[in-house]
Length: 260
Image (cartoon, rainbow, N blue to C red; front, top):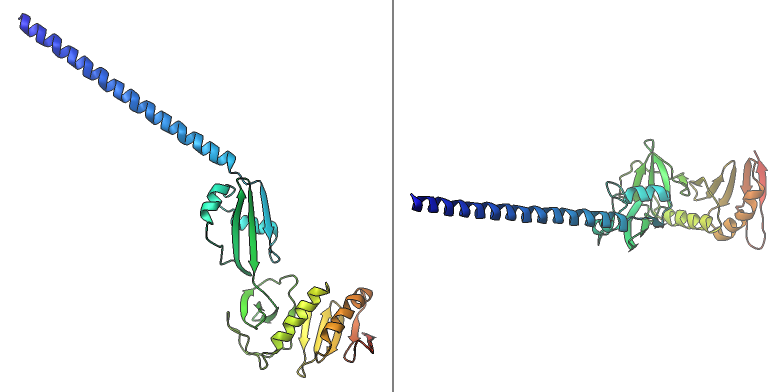
């Protein structure tokens, strides 16, 4: 009986040791889990507070406002976190945005990013099936939209029977696109806002500025004529009529204005 009592006592002590050891292990594991969770929370708080974007530089945008560009880039949860943005846009441009070739995002520091916008080069647009079809310097249709874009002139007088996106406008004389590009560059150079460019069947060019139209003739001395327009158009504000500049040269300055 005494032996059995000793065995039971010994077994009880062993069970107590095992129970204590188990509790100790669970305590250690629980402590490790809590410590790991605390580290995760600390890391999360650090990332959220340290890598919050407060300064944004936007460059190259004309069609879209700064706010619109920022909303496109910083969309979704934690879109203002520079660390996540750097991972999201590392070696990757943003594409598929109408009127934009691509956008690149650079993280300058934990609180500052730069968005570089590369817009498609647009020379003008034509109306077709109640849409505005924008084309580049080569006459290739690059965008179709229901909205007009400020600074891009409407072009009329061109003859075509169909329009296919990403293909050239099927006009008789493709050289007209070089003229359109030259005119667009010149009016921008002289800070003029032209509403419409009209090409006559004889190749003559007419520019529309509100209620004033400037008849430039067949395209001779375009640079000189448009340079002169930068001084004349502001003086004709509020008037309606036609500026006759077909015979204008740098020497003769032959210009007349016919009221409507």
